[in-house]
Image 1 (cartoon, rainbow, N blue to C red):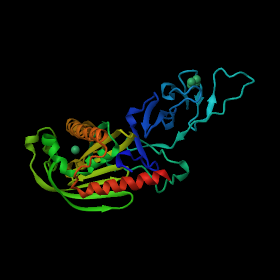
Image 2: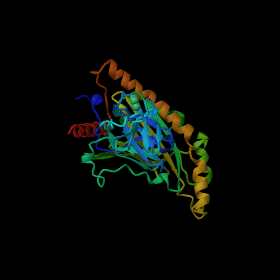
Image 3: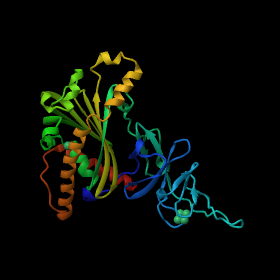
Image 4: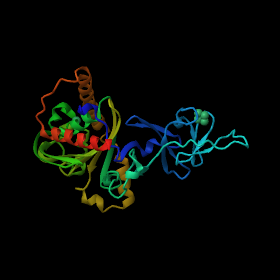
Length: 345
Ligand code: FES
Ligand SMILES: [Fe+2]
């Protein structure tokens, strides 16, 4: 089957929102054609229900949270986090609660994001299938910036973009690296690791080096290993020891993909900083949060444009083949096929 038509393997944890996006109001998200209502109960714990009131099939996410239940906006029916109807406000004394359970999804909050498991719950072995760990999120030595990717394209186009380091050409003033050369690939049924050698523009070894993020003229080219990994269904990259980037995917449907790009700048080289009180280090981390925003958003805009053009070209001419020279992309497509097939079983 054509790779651009393939589904996802639902037996993985996907990211559906940032923690900060879900406050007291329910939030509607879509993961691979499934509309899902997220909400927090009275203790702040996140729950995920099918975003459909079984009474008249309107969106439950338009309702509100009532105690630990989600209440529909239309007639006020209430639902437990298990998906069972728990109350109908106008139920007569001789009427029973309707037996109209809706689907609930396993959901968890970890490292600043809300992770959801859309697969069959019986197949969820929580010891072997877990959300990707983003240890830098809490670590005091890493400064985070998050950019949201919304692109009208099949997720395979995004993953291929992220795994193809020969596209530094696109980024001109924004680029962090140049002259990438693919050296080696490791792959199995769950991941592809591509190792490139590249030249990096950044060296975050002095405190003033942070200003390289704002003043491109301060950058100096030097060789660094550039590793990119597709750890199905997400992506991780390191450029030398100073940068780590994650891309957490939420494929919306066959022609739409949402993702979060998280860029971490390491302060590991500043040993003096590490001797300061934890409260101060947290203050530094929090006040520098988002310091690479302009850079990251700029990169995302350029990538999204290319990815959407690829999707459009595919829709216009589905049979037209490209000329791919990067063997990492062959591995990526193979993995997407293996996983999509698994998802069917
Ligand atoms: S449609 Fe939801 S309560 Fe009636
Ligand atoms: Fe890019």
